[in-house]
Image 1 (spheres, rainbow, N blue to C red):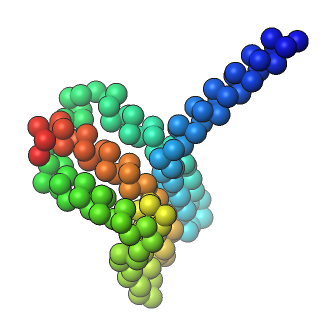
Image 2 (image 1 turned 120 degrees about the vertical axis):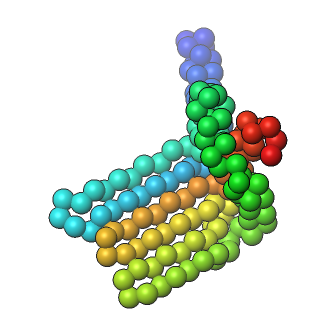
Image 3 (image 1 turned 45 degrees about the vertical axis):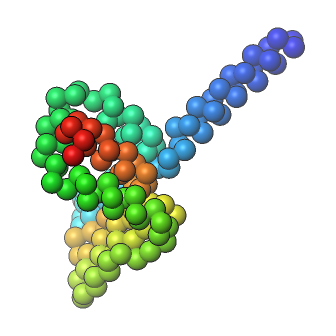
Length: 145
């Protein structure tokens, strides 16, 4: 009986540590709702760690092509993500008119983009650490831009 309890404790501890590692960077959240009859409603959450790992295990040629296309903006993205971490809760852009409302802000170390309009609602949240990791990896593939 003691052996089963120890095994159960070991499995539980392993699962807890695995979950903690998987979610340590946070979650990428995408919510899209179309405001029309039969409109799409897409909601998904992905552990940000999977994206950081994904850029290392994705086919090198595909990542290299993406890195070459983004070459001009990578330094600005990396530096922007790094510097925005100094402002955990800051409103970056807000545009309102009669039909649309767009808001870009940092909240608790995440970049958050909210778009509300006649066509629907879009909310995207990405940890700044993930943006920085992805841009650093792409810069490596470009030879350290």
